[in-house]
Image (cartoon, rainbow, N blue to C red; front, side, top):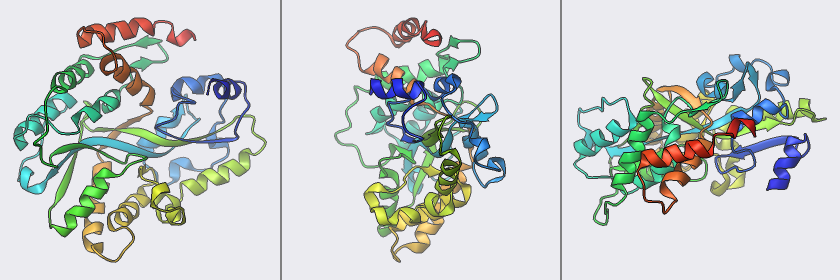
Length: 338
């Protein structure tokens, strides 16, 4: 892996990169964009700003006005509940920690079975990065510390007797589709499953880019690469049906960046491409599309997420979350000079 990174930084390696959230080749996308290795995609794809794309998510791949990375899909962490649990109530909290406690309280649970899963996505709940690449500073906000402390406190809770819902889930995870599978199963029992996305502290929700593409700056095939990326943005591919021949195990499961493809994609996933429950799938797909319209910020969050997860939850060190974050900040003090 290290050899691959060295090749890429030297302007060698693949012409086109198609990566998801599991990528370890280019962990910090923003930092990687400053080295001149990647092509400004505006030079090979015309009219990105005029395409029916979620422009907020698209701009996550933009640095200094240049589109070095092309977001293809994104995800939203949240909590799945039933309409019966919700009633007429809607959460009002604008910070992740308060939201988690508020939904717990309303649904009458101490915590959620998959709550620890959320520890892998903490930084990405927020619309602002912990890294300021212009000022070359690192800041772990009080709000980030609050949700981290809450999850650390609650990880000792036992959920042996917990029901399937309510639960923490990811809408648009790139390699698993537990939310859509749950919703699909709910049609048979006439249960209405709702998804409540975590707030980003900035009057909306944050989209975590989890599938994206880039082109090597000195590629001899840049124009062809542009055509390929446009194909990846098409309704056919983004709408999922273009992946049918690859089988369900290979299909695109992130939320499409192409707004016109969100409803067709979810309708297809929720009905498995069969005639049964088409009406229910179409209605739920429209509902999920409306959730995507709550996105007010979007970022590449993978590296920040992994740093916090490893520093807080994958260590035997017995100290406070605040102390662990301080230690992490100290470890990263030369990060911008590397």
